[in-house]
Amino acid sequence: MTSESHRPRATFEISHHEEPSGTLLAGFSEFGLAGLTAVNYLVEQLDLEETGHITAEQLPAITPFENGRPRHHTRLFSRSDLDLTILVGELFVPVWAADPFATAILDWTVEHGVEEIAVLSGIPVPHGPDEHRVFSIATDDFHEKRLDSTDIPGMGRGFLDGVNATLVARGLDTSLATGVFVTPVHAQTPDVEAALRLIDAVRDVYGLTIDTDPLEAFAEEVGEYYAELAQRVESAGDRERPDDRMYM
Image 1 (cartoon, rainbow, N blue to C red):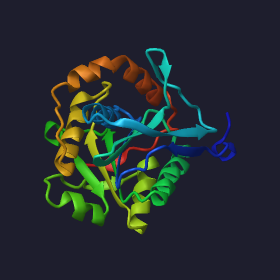
Image 2 (image 1 turned 120 degrees about the vertical axis):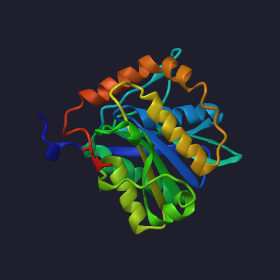
Image 3 (image 1 turned 180 degrees about the vertical axis):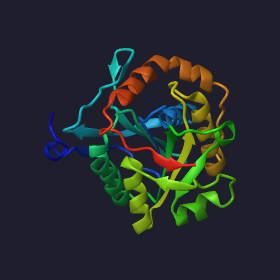
Image 4 (image 1 turned 135 degrees about the vertical axis):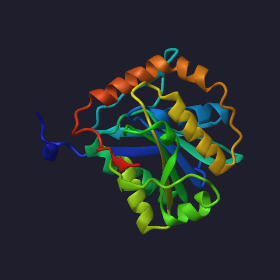
C-alpha cells in the first residue's frame, strides 16, 4: 500500500464562465450526505444554472451522469438576481487531499471577491431526540453578519477536520466570514430529516423562500444514486476520512 508520505499531491482547478456572488454556500460528499442533499435541493428550488466546475488531478475521481449525459462531480451554480453561489461537491475528498482542495477554493474566493463561505454538513455523533437541530461553528464576523439574529446555537466543544477545518482556519486569519452549519445524521442515506434541518437554517439565515414539501420526493428520486455515493464514503478507510471529533 502506498504510504501517505508517498502520495502524489492532489491538485484542483476551478473553471467558471460567470463571476461568483459575494456568498458561497457549499455541501460536500460526507457521511449521511445531508449537506449534499440540501445544496442539491436548493439548486433545484432556486432554479440556479451551472456556472462553473472544479476538476481534480491525482485523486480517484467519479464522473456522474444522468439520462446518458455526463457532468462534472463538483459544480458551481448561481443566478444573476441572487447574491448566492452554491457549490455542489459530489466527489468524496479523502483527508489527505482536503487541504489542497479547500485551499484551491479559498484562493479562488480571494481572486474573485467572495466575502463569505458557509458549509452545510452532517456529523455522525451520538445524540438524543432533543439534539435534532442545527448548530454552528463560525468566525466572529460571520456571527455578527448572519447568526446574531437567529436562534442557531454554537456547537459546544470539539475539533474540525478535513475541508471544513481549512476553510474555517482561513476565516480566522482573514476578513473572509466563514461558518459551518452542522446537524447530527443517521446511517440512512440520504438523511432527509437532517437535510431538511439544514435547509431550514439556510432559509432563516439568508431570507430565502424555499418550498420544502417536495424534499421527500426529491430524495427518493436520487436515492439510489446517493446510496452509491454513500457506499463510496463508508468504504473509504479510516485514514481517508476526517475524524468526527465534534461534541454537542
